[in-house]
Image (cartoon, rainbow, N blue to C red):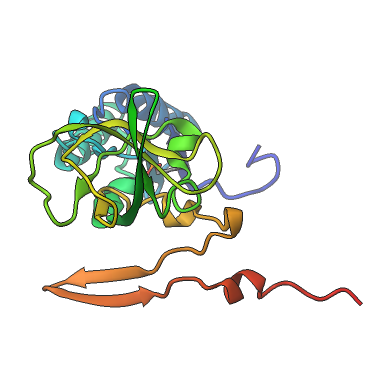
Length: 239
Ligand SMILES: Cc1ncc(COP(=O)(O)O)c(C=O)c1O
């Protein structure tokens, strides 16, 4: 198609999906790409972008963290040996580690408003949920949580974490073992640095939370909390 339409063809990209913890499935796709590169007659300065975002553990059940170095070594090794076997010049390699770059840098902090026991479950009702993190509702993303004031306290009972948005899907975690919790406590949800605020919305008139940058024991406000005025900013009165 590129040749037919006189477009420059500089390289090959593929995307096999997200949350890889084992790079092996990328191997056959890389080799197919190299075969295609030979067929296309790529010479020096071609690009290969083997996609498949590298995974992160969101929950203790998913530990250890996928090994980023192993992912890089596997891709680089497969490309180098595959190119040698085919007499193909090495491409410029463009990796797509995706969320693994930033997901663990973010921690979402919620305040527990009330506890409710219903149908054999304990519900912890938080001041955020679906509007700031739609991932559990969208595709069943699996999170863990811990208490800010007592992160190492022993777990007592499974608790369901829910938000205030009047939707049955407004549940951040189901039956998560937690220490005894009380209204007013802060609850931290780790691994909130990717696909969270970027997916956040204003559903139910929710205001997006503030964002703090933490380093060297200092906290700096890098995004202020939204206000109702922000929600109305684009509205224009009818005549
Ligand atoms: C082409 C491409 N590369 C990389 C990524 C990043 O992957 P991840 O979502 O696993 O962080 C995506 C995201 O879907 C993507 O579409």
